[in-house]
Length: 392
Image (cartoon, rainbow, N blue to C red; front, side, top):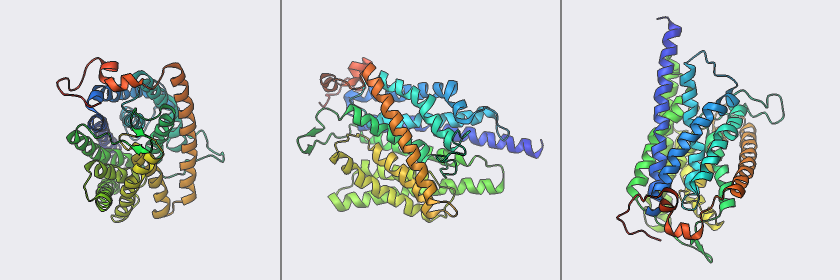
């Protein structure tokens, strides 16, 4: 076997292994969301997460991948491995959204939006940033934005779609009573913890795999640094969120701590391969703080987000992309900001129009009586916990 073939095999294996870690994030999202919602909505949440993976992946296979990259050909790794790696990313944009609109949305409209996101919206953004670049030579060209694994391309794209959805669908019944925010507690904290920690592990494939190669000493060192920095940012985010909520309430809120960790992980995703081993501590800590302050801020705006996805993915997707311009060498801050703005405007506007049209055709929001009964029975015909007394 010659050197090129050996590199081809090693890098293909590396991409396949990273793909498995990223797909592991599917049950991570599912468990986190299933633990956050009330028991009467768990089957619906699990169904949505399963169908998003299936439908989004199929839409990307049939339409989205070629729109994003222009061709299936790849000389450095197996083209099938390259596709699978990119396919593993696509459903995450809708997973980000699905948790934030849970407990009051029907399954079919979410599946329809997942298909549009995976076939058109996300691939167009990938085309502009990582792919064939239809904007080349225009004043909107953002291909020089540095976004290793998608702080903006994936996380803020999903966050903008979620913001559009919440504005159209509205809050859960009973979430806001007068000027008061009614607390709706998580139904299963162990599941929330399991889901978040699975996501954390999956992030190592998410960011590490995005380096693209591990077949040389230099690339192996870059992969290792990327994974180390990813983990460090998650640690810092968790510690910062825990510190803030303890100072505020003299209590340790595990859901906020976990979201702080996820916020740090989102924030480092744009440039985990560019920093020394200390900068991710700052980036992750800011990410955790942003989550701690953004969650109550969005509630004040009556943007009902059960899992805190706006705070984790939208806010920290923006922060992580800007942080590259602030702390990485030879990266223009204005280029990073331009990328955030162009992607944000496109993702929000197109998602809003798409969601609005779907809502007018197939109503997104479940009725008040259906929300009271629970979406498990209304949408799935079976309850996740049939023997439990359900909270209303």
